[in-house]
Length: 182
Image 1: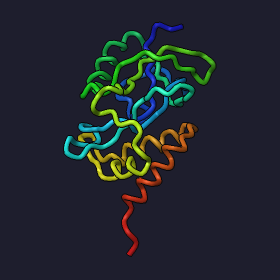
Image 2 (image 1 turned 90 degrees about the vertical axis):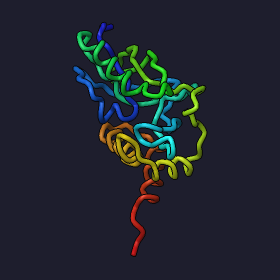
Image 3 (image 1 turned 45 degrees about the vertical axis):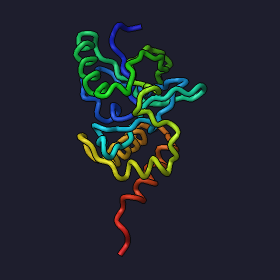
C-alpha cells in the first residue's frame, strides 16, 4: 500500500478534478451509491432556487463505480485543502476515508465526500420526476444544473461506467430543457 493520497470521484471530480494526479483508475465503492440527494445552494443552484448535486449515500449492498486518483504524498496537503474548500462549502458533505476496489484488483483507502444525512441539504428519496424538474430549472455559481448532470453522464459513458438511473434522469432533463417543436 502506498502512502500517497487516493481520492474517489463519483461526480464532477471525474471530469473536473481541479488538482494534479499521477494515476487515475476505475474504482468501486461498496455499500455506497451515487445519488442526486443533496440540495445545491451554491454551485448548481441558489438558496431561492436550489439545484441538485450528486453525493455518495450509504446503501448496504450497493456499489458506486467511479474513479480513484492517486496524488503524490508531496501534494497531498495542498490537494486536501483545495478539496475541502471546494466540497465543504456548506458542510453538507462529510470528509471520509472509504475502501475502494481498483480495476487492477487492488484496494485502497480513499478520501471521499459523502452526504451528511442529518444536514438540511440532504434530500434523499426524491422521485426521478422531481429530480428532473429541479435540475432542469436550476443554475448556480458554477453554472446550469443540467450541465453538471450531462457532463457527469458523458464522462461516465466515455470511461465505460454504466449508470442507467443517471442516463434516464439525463434524458428526462433533456426533454424538459429542449426547445418546443414549431
